Length: 193
Image 1 (cartoon, rainbow, N blue to C red):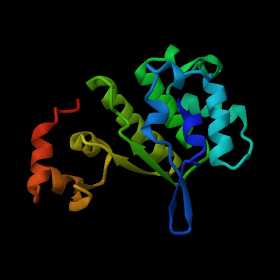
Image 2 (image 1 turned 120 degrees about the vertical axis):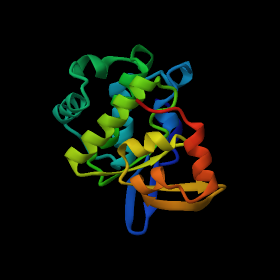
Image 3 (image 1 turned 90 degrees about the vertical axis):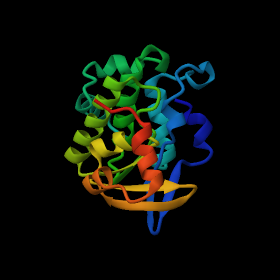
Image 4 (image 1 turned 135 degrees about the horizontal axis):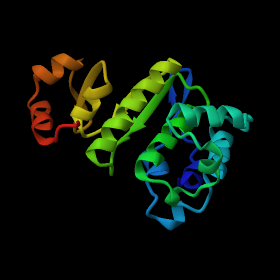
């Protein structure tokens, strides 16, 4: 929730003619740092909308609906909470909801399961896939956990030292990895339940 730090950077990725909202994992993954948790969820939401939507307004009812979509049913309480008052799984579900408030067509998920236990990882990945499919958004997941990516991806690209070393359908890459680095990744990660 250190969105104020990133507000000055505008938090946008340009892809050709498109502006794609992007919130780095640091925005949502710092509940243990008091300097990053000084705003309520509502204040953070207002900052995100202001930065990414260039001052456009939003309806609180839409926010509450989005929170329900990610299984956070007590929306008013969540909005009045501080990040440190929410569990890691709740924070990640909140991050998914906040990333979708402005109805992007593409969502970049940067290490969406870091610092979560295996069961929460699985539920967050399943929820990310479910919600983005329901809203018609594409997800680009950036992770070191290839098996986590495989849980929600139709295709996988593997990078090593900034170079794309393998790309293919999820089934193909997972069952028949062509590159040695892909095999190392597959051997190094624990199974996501």
